[in-house]
Image 1 (spheres, rainbow, N blue to C red):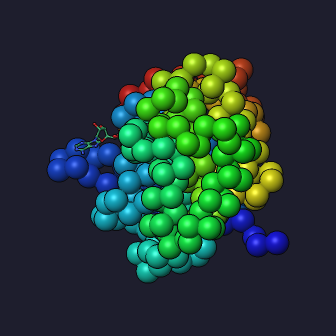
Image 2: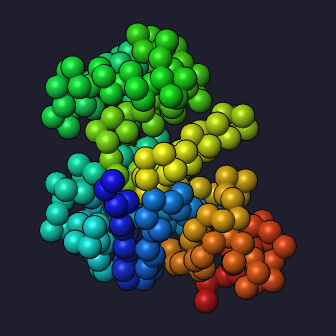
Length: 246
Ligand code: ADP
């Protein structure tokens, strides 16, 4: 079996003009695990995602995928990366399957392969019978599942999700969270799950707390709580995010 993918972010800073969005951020994902990136709005999560997906050029620092700088191996990175962005990027007037076909074609998959893989991903996400419907007819939770199916179509090894369950009801949020967790166990995917919602984390998750563009803490939620004498993740989050700038 292939080893799970590795990702290291080292001393990354990013500025929008005079505004500092990321300030000397370093973190290493645990391969094959559900890694949580926890931060309030404005923490810098989306900026980090934009760098990881090469939407923005790295201004300072280095990001390494499988040990190589992503600037040296952009094609290898993009072929191995599945992404669910905060804002939906589905075409509402295409069917579920057409959205997946479009994505598969961009990754150079044959129509036969795309249909085969689409059936597989839509089935385990409980959407097999919706594939011929326009995305517009689906509720928010189902649209998110389609985005996950699409992100998995080219068999990525690293899955990035930016506030993937934002705006959904609790049941849909939990279902999507559990579905993504199962990918780590069943497919050895390395997952980076960015959120501001504490209830999406489990105590054993490798967790990074990002606030005002800086890494405030990293470790499992449980170990961070113990080290900082906090009762739970909520207290921990408050401990690190109620502080002003250093
Ligand atoms: P998060 O995803 O955690 O909410 P962002 O990465 O969106 O955080 O934002 C980090 C900081 O950078 C915020 O202060 C935000 O206002 C600022 N920012 C984000 N995008 C831009 C942009 N395109 N231009 C200027 N400032 C930006």
